[in-house]
Image (cartoon, rainbow, N blue to C red):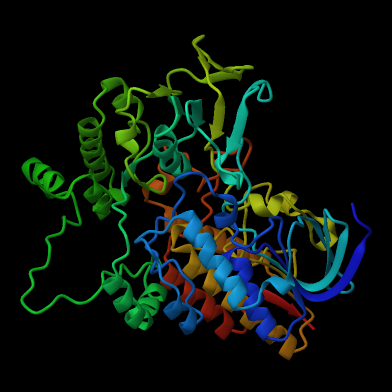
Length: 547
């Protein structure tokens, strides 16, 4: 560890992903002395760390981009409809260079603690490099999907081969040629990486406990004329993003020419259609139509129908009945978890070299020096083990840091009964600490860059207000945080997200010992934004302001 380096700042930002970068840009324009602290060696956050084969965004590139700079919108040319990780990382590096952000980012440094002093209303932030930062404001841009989740497997260190996690993939290319590969997990990262690895591996075994509902991505190269028109239409696209529930405008390009026949679309509801009509829609629109039936979000009968349609489609693609059965999500409803989109995922299982072990039938017992053993006594050998087991979502990036507020209470202790944060922006008992896309905000249930931009702008406006009015400290009231948590819970009631058989990372169910609680806000970006504006209009209702 280097010698202790002390520095007094107006604000410290933890992280330099999309949220940290935009927050840094905003606070610098306000004239603050601000520093972003980043564990990685480059910008990008999730798009820096998640560089596994096949990694790409599931939101259209046109809409998964910053809106704060008209010049930036016009100068960047996307090459695909839904962009891959390497291109997104290049885009974010371009943003960092264009706005000269790196000079105020300290890379290769992990924040280890943040402690609040009540007498001075300031935070002391320490790092693994020996830094001690004294700051008025602490902004946590740690991201919703940050801390990798490793399953609790007996003898986890016994395996002698190569081990990787999709969330901490090395920059150097991993060569799977001629290797036997095991992939544990089947969320988005597993679905994206399995077809790519299967192209080179001699053998791939997928170990899956909770198979996912996944649908064709239908990604394609970006058409130059589409991109050119989108650049002209950006003002309308951005306005629609901010004024809809998902933060996705659903931009389809130029308006239809006069006389042009619009392509038919599947029905919005499955109930009311006859069995023959359902079959006709499935044949016309394919598996991709299934998540579009909105009544399946709320109605169990509708959900059962679309699940049968899904299984029918799955069995038509995967030729081996055993593989198709193992890939079928039998024990939880569609929309319990975020549906995944894929490219040739199910088709990969038609290869003789790709097999699947259904962990609902026989769980992983332990790792061995050469592979793993399941509870039925079966042994599997492989050369490379890939964990595609996701994250300690929403809260992991915060609880991984020793954050202590009033009275020395840690954020882990504060959230022992579940994470509550007023509007997802502040935690009671932790003044002047802001959380970008924290629990209780639309975050991962929305186009997250839209939610990130709104939070950064709200925090920037709020800090400016505090400074202009000589307000020493701002803290969410516990009563407001509790009331908001109740509202977040109410917004999710009646949906498949909180169905009795649903276990998802939205609820924290993937982490042993984590309190089950629905964390993101399902009310929509538009309603959430209006609530935040109302709070400001009422003099920061729900917050305690101290001069």
